[in-house]
Image 1 (cartoon, rainbow, N blue to C red):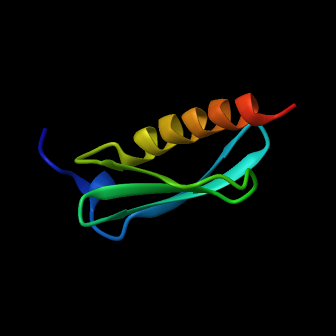
Image 2 (tube, rainbow, N blue to C red; image 1 turned 135 degrees about the horizontal axis):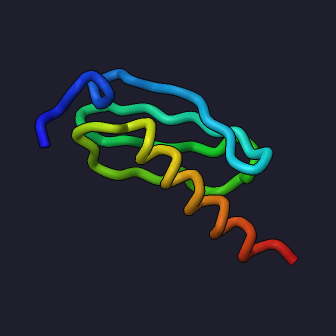
Length: 71
């Protein structure tokens, strides 16, 4: 897959999953997703395109992991 504007260096955005707010940023081909409300460690992945889609997937994974730690 060839890189496109979705994964341009410095791309960033915000997203929300089930009431939790997060941010994502692409820097040097690495996507980093940070949740602002769950209080868990950020997740990172290499990305070439569709950074916003991958960010949503990572945020969903973070949410599933967060739910497992809740009483």
